[in-house]
Length: 475
Image (cartoon, rainbow, N blue to C red):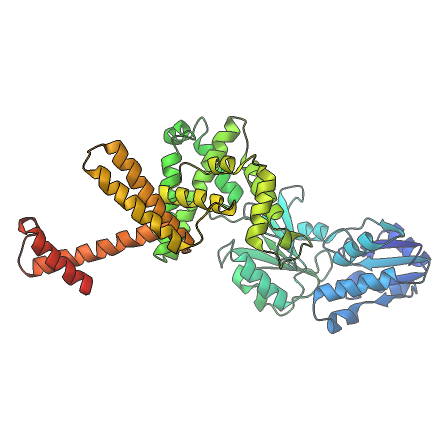
């Protein structure tokens, strides 16, 4: 490894923008590496007779850009020369992954020398003050997202293939025909600024390593997550909506329940369009609660996101750490959750199950907790005997007219049925829901048969109704 590595930049234009300090370092280095000679300022190397090695061939030989950056970094880091210089287009601090690898892995001195960045050329070309708000993203990093509320600069649009990928990803945030600027060789005499529609950017033939995409703010109303949070904040502000301002955590409970069930209904109907809208309504409820909490100085939406993010990472060590992925994931989840909560007893764990859950789900959850503690039937067949026992007890109290006792015994019967379904790996809530739907279908058919025979249901005997009901069951 070298004794020192100087990382330099050609600047954004021709050789006139190379700083005197950069030139001095290049002339006094023992070895000079150049990311690419396809840059207007690269001619200075020949002019001053500076020996160098270019990595242009790597772009042709490697399968992907990650391999290119890895090769560059390995070559620079393994150089036997004492003083090494590595020079890149523009500035070394913008979108240079090989530079990041070198800085991270070098055990010698690494210096980054300031240079005129490509951004200087870009903002000069579009006539915009770079001090105004803008967002810079790398076309090769799919994790980076644009901000339609401000100018977005997309660098490293190397070729038409990258331009095509960029176009498709940007169309998730902007209209297809959104006007954009495709700028090539910014800051040089060959500078080209083309004003085209977003969907056209991969149709330009001369896209190369000096091409940058500039996307002006969207004039259409676009709301990202932060925008939606700002809308909720505005609704609850002094000049906002009187209804929204009046809401509390407690008053919003019914809406949280309603919106959740409407989203579930859309899922069951496989109605993706409606599901999209209903999930938005659920998200709105989350943001309303978070905004109320922020006003009360309790927590913010950022706290909500951070808390659930930390929990997901913590409870998935097989994904986010080196933990063996072959472990029993359900057991691992329960163990981590128990360590987090530190329950003093099984009953304390049961007591933490939300009382506002639908009764059948609540029953099944506390049964599952008891089962994990070893308190359970050996199987569904053994549990079924409890149904017979509870049925007899309910039958005994029906004639008493004691509503409290009837309610208690009826609950015991439902609890016993839930146990059997749990042991049979069936969700009792879903089972009862399906039975309700089946009843509705049969009752609809029942009415149809009765009307077809010219009869009135209200005037029919129980025996006649049973006859039609059995017809419906058969069909």
